[in-house]
Image (tube, rainbow, N blue to C red):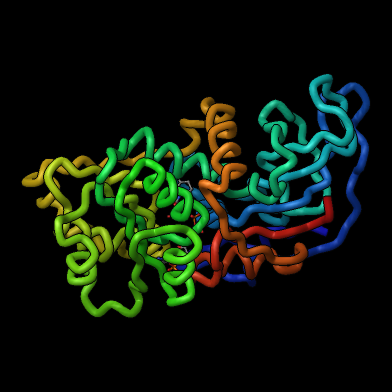
Length: 338
Ligand code: NDP
């Protein structure tokens, strides 16, 4: 079985209807003489950026469009079941870009990471120990550089990236507040993830007032995941020399006319640094990150909430759910038992 792209997204959000789950045959051996591997996919990650690949990119972009009629691709956790590559043997557990299907032939397996901590839940390699965790680690430690006592705000705080960003800032001794789109998520942030405060942005009539309530002294670091009205309200509440790592702007991705930032002048008068970053620039530091994060997890210093959809048939709905906040924690799809 595989999830294929049926047609490109032309306006607005992708929908389940852009994808189709189809059955077919798969080659389970590697072509003679090739250095390919065949993967049995165990867990597939749902990430907002994957849907950008569902549009036909007219301009050069850092990501390529999916091919119509072929399986979608994204990060996943897999087991090697056939190998022509000297560095990979049958039974190895790996994570990296794979197909949204049961079995995938990877021609260049050098891009895959071997899993060093199989004693931790393997699904974590789609999240806290994978690309989203590395994103949070890079955005917090390389871009924001928090100091003890800094006041930190994280949006989409219960998501794959946000929950790690907030907990890393807590480990640095910061005061951390998160926003999320439901009361259940707010409750989890405060009771399970150790955030000092959290609020449901959908219930707040005035985001500026909500931020003033949570940050009477102002915000030192804003970990930006959503953009739009939230960024404007934050800019009004930043302190001098604050930092805003620009990680994502999910509220803007599917607007025909992005809203724009109205309060940017605040960044000048308050000497605030806004800095975009991409996780792809940090893959060279993955092994360092993996060891640090595995240690935090084993010591119980970081915990991770996952939302696991069961089976490839549920994958299209799981991916689309990210854009309405249906996921409670890191969204992934379980495809096969380990
Ligand atoms: P999440 O797991 O946080 O899922 C997306 C969440 O965004 C939803 O659960 C929802 O939560 C929230 N959301 C959806 N629509 C809106 C909206 N209109 N306004 C406000 N919130 C909304 O996703 P990730 O943690 O994987 O990604 C978070 C952000 O980080 C995204 O913007 C993504 O593009 C970006 N990213 C950037 C990377 C980089 O290299 N710079 C790498 C990885 C991710 P809620 O219920 O709270 O609304």
